[in-house]
Amino acid sequence: MAKKDNSASENYELLKRELKEGVFRRLYLFHGQEHFLRDHYLGMLREKLIGGPAQDFNDHRFTQENMDMTQIADAVDALPMMAPYSLVEIDDCDFSRLTDTETEQLSAILSDIPDYCTIVFVFDTVTIKTNERQRAFKKLLSSGLTVEFGCQGQRELNAWIRRRFRSHGKDIDDRLSEHLTFLTGGTMTALAAEIEKIAAYSSADVITPQDVASVVIPVLDAQVFDLTDAIAAGEYEKALVKLRTLLQMQEEPIMLLGAIGSQLRKLMYARVAISAGKGESGAAELIGQASGKAPHPYVLQKTVSAARRLPDSFFAAAMQACVETDAVLKGYGDAQRALELLILRLAQEVRRG
Image 1 (cartoon, rainbow, N blue to C red):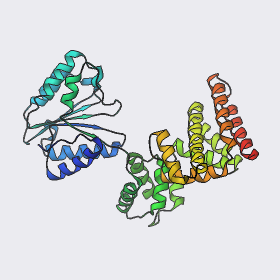
Image 2: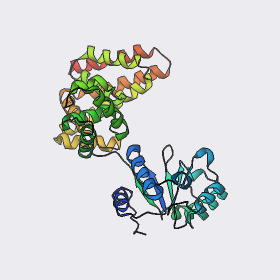
Image 3: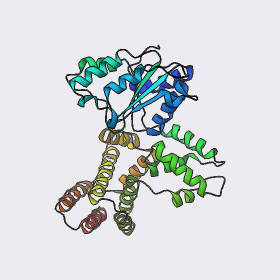
Image 4: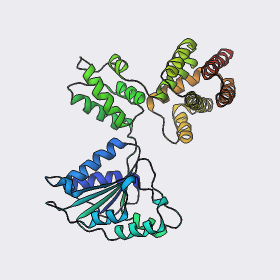
């Protein structure tokens, strides 16, 4: 067995290298928001371990609904049929909620995994966590390879998007790839679905912005970004039309307000960075620290540009307006009227500057 690397971020590269070399661990823990990548490498692991005519006999999967420790133990101990390995996939096992008996049973399973079996824990709706009583069990889990499948950087996404389009006989430039990433939220799962639709829609060899606009329905954050960008640009009618469109799409008013407030805070961080002379890189750092992730390049550029147009006095008034709108929404007031008044108040604050 290859030497274990304790860094989850580096383990992604380690997994790729080991699969290429034909090195298989007895225990893996897969998590992270990029489900497309996770499923890709899980499928690759499955194909390399148990691919063949008897795959169904050697592929054992357990979910929250059928997570019985005795059955898991039986699956792990079962000899593979017409293949050198067997695979046991366990989905969304919340370690912290296991009883002491279940923890002991699972510990016994993981401490003696046969050489012919690989166990993969896949975390989708739960996180990898243990409770205070599970110290020995936690140490046992550390013997596996924990791999986080996080969102890819824009450079990697641009190359991947271009490959997907080229498989359909089409091409796309990097700038439009960045815009498409922004519109879809940036996950490969969402991008893959939209690329299929765009490629089927477009009659040209090179994808155009019109192709993207005709097919892709932007995620909420992208639409709210356009709304706040319209406010900063003084296009208040456009902002109101965007708001009404979102409400007609049955978006929850409280979610809309939260998204508007989030984007206003990003504008404020960008303004602080600009005022301090730190420019775009400083804005990226502040926004990243506040939100927990680096801003998308397309969003960052437009956020900084919008922040330059806004007066310093705008932000305190804008936050106060959001707080007051939140009180109205939680008091079951007229949601559409409250949000429209918010847009108009923000517009007034921009004009005052």
